[in-house]
Image 1 (cartoon, rainbow, N blue to C red):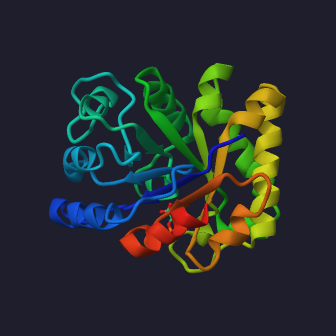
Image 2: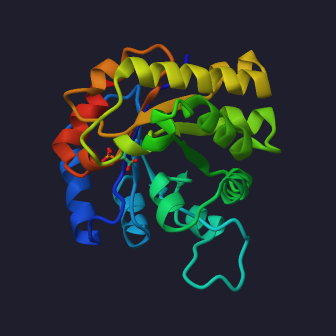
Image 3: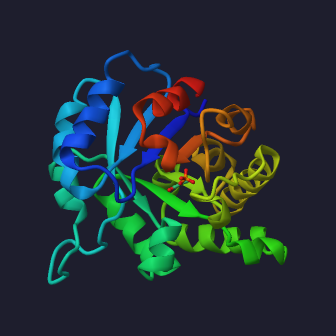
Length: 249
Ligand code: PEP
């Protein structure tokens, strides 16, 4: 039985004050206990959010990390700095980082390894561009990204991570994938994990859909057998809509 995950990706939104106000509204009513609820916030809000989320079951995540233990990497943040303040998850390879910050499959792989070594749960993002989809390359592209992201990882490590399938053309556009298409690609990702490891690993790894998920469409995605939850950008910024997403899971 895979526990569903609803993870919010706030991107570059919310000051510390705004983040705390969100959390206090979210905590004003109990959240369902059978859903892993995660908020991935900008670095400055992380310590305050970890403290404010204590005892709520809400996990706090970062949106990036550096693969090195420490060193001369101006502007970067290490895994140890994140675990030190109680962060438990980290998004790796989001398409915005691949597009605007030259994130590659190789850096995704290195960051994933570092995150796992430090006990952080990586949320590894994969997904095709519109051009790739329109030229029929979706499965090829996604398979390559998954193979490269997981390169060198042990079965036990893969079981503990989360994959997010996020077609680039669906992120922040209001144009979500159909649930059937997302279910098919996510089923394909699961079979890829089975090819690389075995059925047991493939049966345990959680795979989320991301891309214009909202309270109105999340039900259809969750009804797909292989989809274990959602990574949500825009609709995670409002506590009431985020609560509805968690309640749907
Ligand atoms: C995301 O940022 O990962 C995302 C899926 O964004 P949105 O829900 O806004 O499409």
